[in-house]
Image (tube, rainbow, N blue to C red; front, side, top):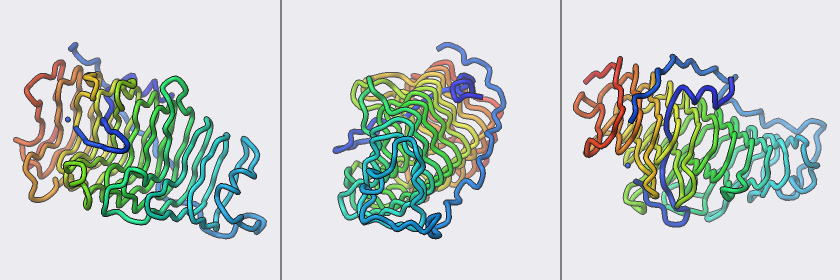
Length: 351
């Protein structure tokens, strides 16, 4: 079943952020929502081994030299190769297994072409204590008229970055699965103006544990949002992900999203579990489904906790979620009670 077919059953999108100076934010009856059982991906967090490359080909001096030498549309196997500094991928390419070590202020992999797959890469930054918007593991910064299409990012590890694990702006028909994103100052995985995609079985942890004060404590595990007056993110399935330790802000977030499904995700030790709100242009989130998630053990010693928060949301279904440790008063907050078409059924809320 296509992503759009899955998402047509559901709802929403996420987060407004400017790349250099990022500051986070928060009627019709919804259509019936079917039970969703995400298809598991194989070995979701197992990266390819770091053994020698097939045929023992030598590693070139830089990752950019490797990319430049590869033919368009081919597979480039760099298992066992480690590079100081990242690269720009400007052609269709299947890149496997490189390890990238970045200096302070550097970006890892920049994608400017359609039909790119990044599989089993390791991108390690220099620090995870001070906000730096240039420190990004995987970066797309396209225009609305020419989005990057059919990008796949799977089984990668992105860590120790002052900005973002992934910053994907104006992308379409993407798949993000089985990645391990950790120790990031601002956002683990952020999609801005995405048009169709799947975010599945990723592990995102320790986001904003240090350095969040640079952005008024804003930090995001997985966020679907916009920037400026660009289109809202729409038609995304966000399933079977785990987000842990976002102590100052939001585990999952959508600003202005359309037809977003949050299903089968787990949240631990975050200030807010799932946050659904307007974007910077005033677009209201519409057709959001929050179903079969486990929202567990909020961040300790924080005020203003909420497992699910809505603001000016339209047509929202909150179904069969398990909420533990937040308390019934902190299960659902409709800020200023301005949301419409909200259905809340079958949830289990424990102290």
